[in-house]
Amino acid sequence: MKALVIAQLTFREGLRKKLVLGVVLLSLIFAALYVWGFHLFVQDWRAMEARRQAQGATTMLPYEVFASAMVLLGLWTVNFLAGVMTIFAAVGTIASEIEQGTLHAIVPKPIRRWEIVLGKWLGYAGMLAIYIGVMVAIVTTTAHFIGDYRPPNILQAYGLILLVALMLLSLTMLGSTLFSTVANGVIVFMLYGMAITGGLVEQIGTALDNDVLVRIGVIVSILVPSDSMWRLASYLVQPRIAVNFLGPNPFGTTVPPSSLAVWYSIGYMVVLLLLAMARFQRRDL
Amino acid sequence: MTSGTTPHRSDWAIETHGLRKVFGDRVAVADLSLTVGYGELFGFLGPNGAGKTTAVKMLVGLIRPTAGSGLVLGRPLGDHRARRQIGYLPELFRFHDWLTGEELLDLHGQLYGLSRAERRRRIPEVLELVGLTEAARRRVRTYSKGMQQRIGIAQALLGSPRLVILDEPTSALDPLGRRDVRDLIRRLRADGVTVFLNSHLLSEVEAICDRIAIVNRGRVIALGPMSSLLAGELVVEFRLGALPDGTLAALERVIQIDAVQHGERPVLVARAADEAAVAQAVDLLVRAGVPVYGVIPERRSLEDLFVQLVNEERSEPR
Image 1: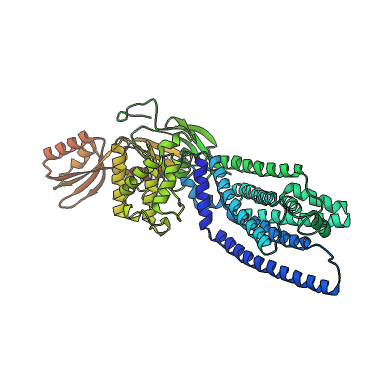
Image 2: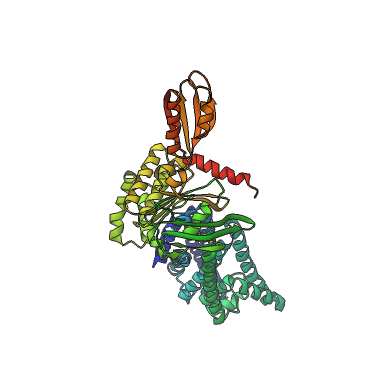
């Protein structure tokens, strides 16, 4: 299938882009800081426990609540970086190639236009699957070897973070068939920011028991379901005791989105990709 | 539309009927109808902004026509099945310049659906054809403009196409490079490949094309074999000796005199309907006792025709 030729090209191109390289460097810095931070946290925890025991006080909360919070912070950062990388990598994938003229020699080849869009999507998806996989692995192995803690449902969390990235990928690519690179970047980042803010508003609404705020959050998560999938991931990856202790918070939720929301998100990803294909099919180059 | 020198064919390599493209309120191509026969070297000419590149883009499926229809290699415009046999060099192109020349051709070979073995055989061949064998392993980014144009031509020839559409293939080349490309195009025709050449270099088109179309304001204003388009009136310069009175008047009956340079050896510039008229004029002069030192026919060039046709259009109201 010709789409795979484009997928391979996109993957290789992604590896050579400076922006992606930048994200990878940032990610390495993050990984180093994360390992170090986790190490400091474990040290502090042990020192605090030792003090407590010396004073004869009982443990207030189990270790896993704090270890889980560390994992949650790590995964949140991975989720955020993956989102940023997705948008940066794919923001000009169609638009800038039209502007530069690189598509002019590709489109007249015996390949269907939708295969070009699908191929690009697959190339980026492969890159993201690897990137997110490596980053999640860094977080969990750090927790395991430094913190002696194993978060639950890590594979589901990986899948959901990947789903977040792939939804943003479809959204960014659709935008790239409609707008110029710059306009698309502005629009997609605004939507992404809105999704994050919407998630926060929903958490505040839950904490204050305010229906209007919760509803705003829900509406935003229908428009751009990236944040709600992250919150489901965060819910799954924490032990129940940690969820209950943290309550509504910027990084997680006490009310996980339903499986319907997951299907909605998958549908969102597919439909936006199909729209991008349909749009590109008709576009003059 | 077809004249004596081109055999009539029921199926053309390219055939368009009333192609039209409107961008917003700007008409890029108004009404383009033309035919290109198999094996022909076809020149597509027109002033800047005549809609040539838009027309070419419609032929290769980059742009959808607003109205009209067309067949390329017997398939509707934009049909991807015909594209296996079409090689296309875009006008304003940029390749994925982080690839080496070889990698770029490998990518395009894959897009053409060539097998690994075919690519391994064909890529060195086309690199050789365009003279880039030495630069095969260099990144396209480091190529000069002329080299980029060559790799673009190589990419168009990769799939051994039946139809090659070249949009300004020599714009970035020096005179030597141009000659190379001209030779290459001639070789393609010798192999039976149909070549559609969009170029504003009239001398280039005149030197190699069999048939041409001249477009202006998105319409075909001349279409036919080069030889018959350039035929027509002859312009002849006569270099003579002393002219007795009345000779000019007698000559006027045979040819139309445009300019006379009097003197010891007068020079006449005249237009004749055909060669027979020129012979008649010479006969008349000799019989009148006028020494004829030279009769120099001036071939009408493609440039003359082009300028004349486009100017005629310009003087007409829009």
